[in-house]
Image (cartoon, rainbow, N blue to C red; front, side):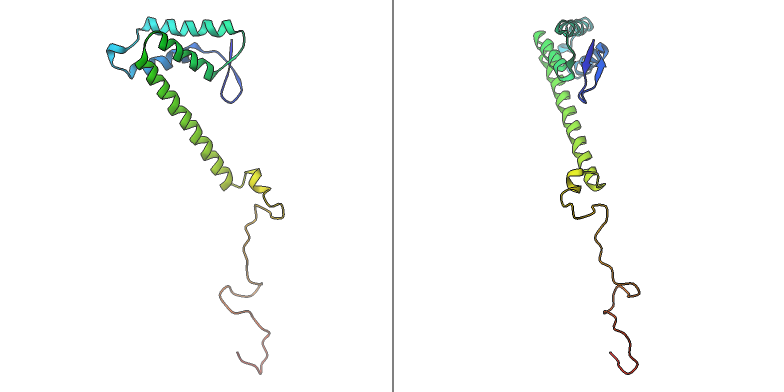
Length: 151
C-alpha cells in the first residue's frame, strides 16, 4: 500500500509512523487520560484497514485526519488536542521554511520572476559607477594639464 507525501512523491505506508505519532501525543497528557498500548494498536490497525479499503493512495493529510477521527471516537480528546496542536506547529514550521527559501532565492538572485522583472538589466551584475581609468575616486574631473595654466 502506498501514500502520497507532501512533496507529491509516493512512499510505502508505514504504520509505525502512525503509532509513534499517537504515542508522542499520548505522552503529553496526564496519565489518567492516556490511551493504553492496546488502544493505540487498535487505532493504527483501524487506519491501516481504512487505507486499504480506499483502494487508492491517500495523502499524509488524509491519514492524519483519520488519526484525529479515531482519537475522537475513543473520546481521547486530550490526546487528540495534543496531536492536532503538534500537526499545526509542524505546518507552521514547514511554512516558515518555505518563506526562508524564498528569501534566500532573492538574496542569491535565483528567483526567475525577479530576474525577468526588467529584461534590460543583467541581474547578476551590480550597477556601480566608477570613475574613468586613472582618475582617483575622490577628486575633481581631470583636465588636460597645460603648463601655463593653474587650477
